[in-house]
Length: 479
Image 1 (cartoon, rainbow, N blue to C red):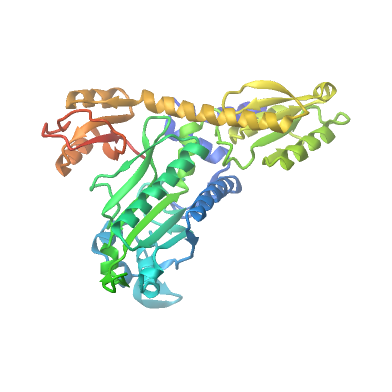
Image 2 (cartoon, rainbow, N blue to C red):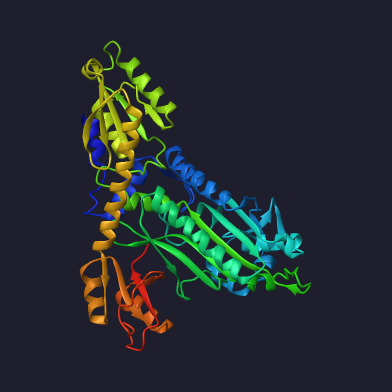
């Protein structure tokens, strides 16, 4: 029992120091370990298993929409990176370079990919000749390197895992539809599987991806009211195609430039899960991505029949399609309760001699701590129902947090007061001017998160300068 108490005390309370709380969970739940190179972390088995489950869900959705997986090289020649001016300027501060091959200097520097637009464009120039070759719907799962100054596991690492989709289309309309379709897939992942409500919208020109015509985003609110950009989708127009001389013979036999998109979601989403759902006792994992959906803890397992009954429960739940772990170690039940609570396992199943006699077990939900007895007959149906109820509860709790922290600000004084009183999302009118956007960052330390698709007009005036408002923008502090 002392070990159980120690595990709980090892986590800094969420209200005391949110950043330290996050770091404690990442370490104590055994998601990552730190490597000898700053900003590069080791994804431990439990952390990687969460990513694998996210990956499976997304990959299925990609393939259902006709996308194919490919693999591009890790290194990009500097001359290739330089072909798109805005793109290279946008990434220049974050690029890591390879200058030696063995003991010999390279004739040209090689960039470790921060993203792969240029590599895909080089390939597209080789394989696209006719409209019959379009669309090209590609995705790759890989790691990228961006030399961030300030790092934090999952949220901002120098190397991270992600998927990056890259597509080419005959027309601008098709490419724009693709951009929004993929943003919709990210929204569905968060809403239906991760239980994270997100705000989809368009980025301002200041915040858009380097080289893009338009960037779209899903923004999630964390427990502390800050925003986390959780997935982005970009429409490039034909800018990259022109830079790389990618043309195709159109249906009327004219030569045209194809229209391009790219879109990505990374292991940052694990940080979103932690900060959206976790509590003072550790992780709370949505069932869809939890490596273990139910853990079976035998009570008084030294007594005859207990382990056998626990094993039958495990086998039955596995046969029903659940990811189940039976902990038959010699640790005390109390230690096990704290351990799996820390790791966010959605459901704990307890069974002991008295339960066996009565033909039942005890179910404990991680999100609410709610305990209930359940008959052994039909247990799989009860487990499914409890996990579904947990999903609804997690989503509604996160939605309530966002609703309570979303504030409509018709003028600057309201905005200034709202920022001073509570971290959250602030809806306010904007004239579209870069100067006003910069002003809010400097004076209130907030940034434009997105122009929400469904935003209602807050005011007919810009919250900063008073000129006519062109957009309602969601402002906030962000990770």
